Image (cartoon, rainbow, N blue to C red; front, side):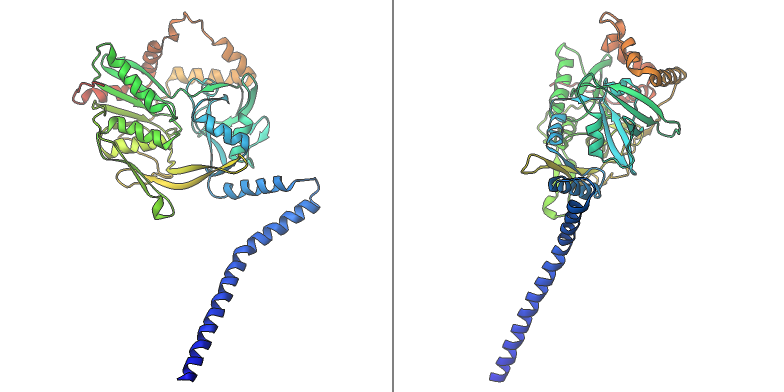
Length: 428
């Protein structure tokens, strides 16, 4: 019995020593990459041809680490972190485009309405080949944003190529202060309100509700809404949920799922009776991304709206902005989002109920060709010459919408479809 006890104690000691050895080996395996990193950093510090600080090397390593994950994860310097906060709440100096890295190419997701980029003819799907003569081939997304943004009045030169075309063109765009106005609305016909959402920032839902309330204040009856999400690059997840809630009485809007089970979260309509229960048609295209796709997906799955236009961008990932102790931060992809029917649209997009490509009328082609020709000479002057006096009738938002209706085949169909639904009165 004593011999058995000795054997048992020996076995326990052996197993304990084995566990310690295994733990030590695991720690060694864990820290081996850090040792390799430290070796490389020392070699660069001591032997690189130009002086570099350790802080520069660490920042560069973080940039590279996040860049290798996916196109939307990135390191934000102190200035970039501040810009990130401003872009969802206030205003910033730039040309007004949302960009992303797609297949290693710097691609325009969408231009923001009525910004220098929009007026210059930059379109969703355009690939930016050069910024100020510098190739974007090895440029990070953060570097590209930093180079394109800048003080009001200072021009930036871009070389781009339109989607499905091969001939590059150059354009010089004068930066301006880009206001974050996210909702524009106007009556397209008596009873039918056109609402354009340009992005999802902190004020989007409040602006949307105000537009709906203002319409019926004068005694008008709201019979239907056309919600235009075309070229809307997205924004805040919370605002996408709240906008969907405006039109949904109940039910799930979106769910997000991360690596761990505790990261799963479901967002549902509040069902407080404040939903706008009128016929609804939503316009989408390839420039509709992220938060726009959350709204479109929720309204489609609940059969609350008809979707008209083209397949959306397909950005179904959620980025969390995490501040670091020194004032910088990281934007990290932490989850994927799913529509109420459980569909992930990551790299797939939302299909419209009515696939309607935007028509390229002869007049539009002539105008586009003329703009390209002139931009190569001096786009800045061209924009100045197109400024109109405040008394010009074409500055009237209602007139602009009527002009748009005359040439926008997707909007035309949306207006016809929204009329087929049963008419309900909206009272705020």
